[in-house]
Length: 262
Length: 366
Image 1 (cartoon, one colour):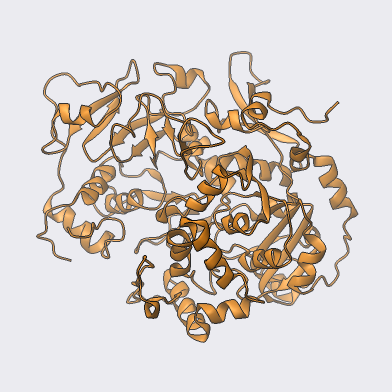
Image 2 (cartoon, chains in turn cyan, green; image 1 turned 120 degrees about the vertical axis):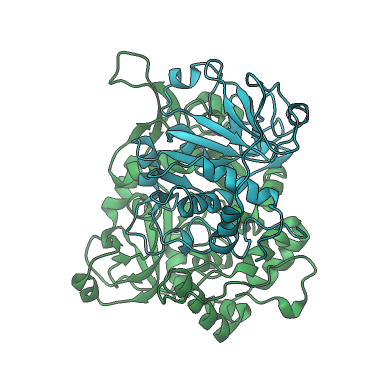
């Protein structure tokens, strides 16, 4: 793998996700970029994290990238593997510090949709996967980070189906609804990193990626974004050493971080 | 009066008029009765796959199988269900990602949906098309966690339980079985979701090893299998190997399926192909890619695909089409390397993904 190539957007996403992870945490990951990111975090600033998976696997030996959450890459040489119901029980009982989810649509309060595009459940434009563990992680995990592609028809005023509740109707409504945890703490797209304004719980730009203006970011968003006070920082880029670790040790075959042609 | 009190909003949203189709999944009395009536003796339950499916899978059954997506699913038993053309099945399982061809073959009428897709290979277009063309209907929508709790409640002998999963989501509006309610233990407002215990009619569970009585050994994630074995009215165990009970007495680690639940034990080497079976063989990556990228795209492709793969008379013919002896050797090497069982850090997992336009000579199912 050539290390002098410029960083591509997927590698950048993996790096930004990894920055959400602090050392010593228990991290609930799906396959794909969050897994790349978690392993990158482990090999850089957070060597003592524990990775847990929906298959129930705890702390597998890392290396290589899986195609399925049930595959050996998520459970090989694990000291133990829990059943699925216990694995979500870990989240509900407060043992999981941070989880990562993808989405097809998201609203300004971080409620997300992985069910369908369209207005009619019985006859949708497209039926997507459904919840899988998405709702469970969103409902139960202490801190959620949501990762997805940003476009005006994906960041929408109202999602077509609430698969998973984030900050629900804003303000204190998640807690009042009876849901534990802090809900979504960050949203990461190819344009920006977002957090949620503490009072209203509305999505707010935290940092913009290099070359992206607030106006451009707003154009690719179907609801009004909040702007932080003062000048908006540019998202931190990884050092050459970190890019090297990502390419050499984490995803050497580029299963999740290569883009054909780049 | 109807015995069951379903979530009215969900019934309306799903346009379910005759609720009797929903009843058996939550009817713990009839499940218990089925369990009481089973022969509880330790006896030799071995039979052929054909006999087991004939006797223990009926038209209209609520059907579930083992594992997680491509991993240790009872795929070859599923093919026998198709060969015997069982009708009007209700699919349930989290995830039951490998079963969408049962809709294409016309064996499934209803689904209790929690996840249908191919993880990193995207969503299942065939499932989406079949839903829109009313080839099957969704009777209830779930998350993995909530469904897993329903099975777990059944295993623990509970009528149901309360949880925080699903709160505030639209899933509740499309699931007649669950509802939001106040936590009866609390005076302050504390909303919880009631999830009833779930009792499938038949669970087909693929395990690495079983004894002739039906004690089952699983290596790798058990997912929901232990709960589904206890819950289901009928259980078929398909096993890579039949071993003497003394092997389990010497080392009972991983023996998780209790014999009493099991109606039939089927010796079925390669029973999970084209999926994987930990310790035995890796999944056929190209097969699933072709399924999702070719077969699932439209009805015509799907029929061609199924005509080729579902005309096998047994798993050995299926194996031959996957690549025969070479497939067996390769997929065994792959799974052992992936599991770090042979410490082979030089093993190369690279392969040619199935893409439209792939040359026939590059279609290798390992």
